[in-house]
Amino acid sequence: MPISDIKEDKPREVLANLIKEGQEEEALEMIAEVENYHEGEEFVFAVLREDASSEKIVEAVLQAFLDTRSNYYRSHGYWVHSLSHFTKYLWERRMDDWVKKFNEVSFRGANELQDSNCSDRLVDDFVSYANWDDDPADFHLTFDNLEWMEWSEDYYAYTRARIASAPFETEEAFLRWWLRRPEEKTTFDFDAQQNLVDVSEIKAKIERLQALNEDVSEFDGLIQGLLTKQLQEAEAKLADAKADYERERAEAAVKKTREQLAQ
Image (tube, rainbow, N blue to C red; front, side, top):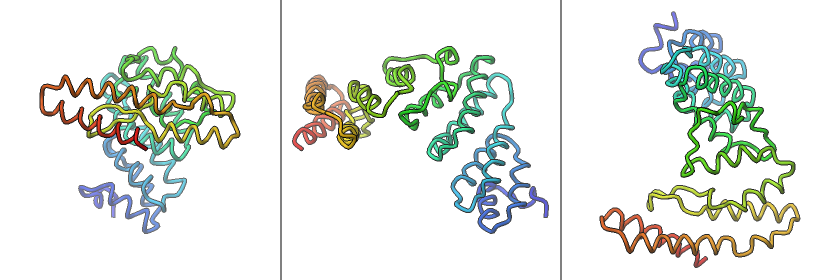
């Protein structure tokens, strides 16, 4: 039966089932007949989330997705938007060759077509998933190549600094660099609807330095100081809150900060 006749309206499930049942040739045929990047994204998720996927199938589905790109304005950006939904899985699997390939194509389109839609997500991927010794230039992350980026200080200050400072010569150098700018490495809190100090990450970095038998005395009181400052700012917001939602968010920030200070 032709693949087109069995795809029905749930191509992801159909492809996943073919892989589970060991029907590799049928799965490859289905991947080769991908219609567009929307379906290509569905196929990628089906393959990456199925443990039975062979390397041949993984390579085929990523190449098929790459081939769905159209080299003209808007279409390129929509393709990058779709791509950005699964790049974290490529980073987590350390599929570096594919990360580099997708970055190169995405950033080239951003530069040549002036279509940078969602390419900033790929830039942020480096900050989220790269190892301390990764060189951003290897992933096409150079400032000459990223002239289209809008480096907002509110959102991209840490991203820009991380790219500018890498690669690091040692893990210790990276950890110390990170710990000296922790206010730019916060985590979003949904109750407070704002970024709060990432205490667990700071502790993890300090503990890693200790495991490397490094002196961490310069960071004594770091967490206490950051939380104290955060509490003062949260209490000020609470005092100035007018709307109920503003008050609820400020109260959440105050409550969580006090709890962390008490630990």
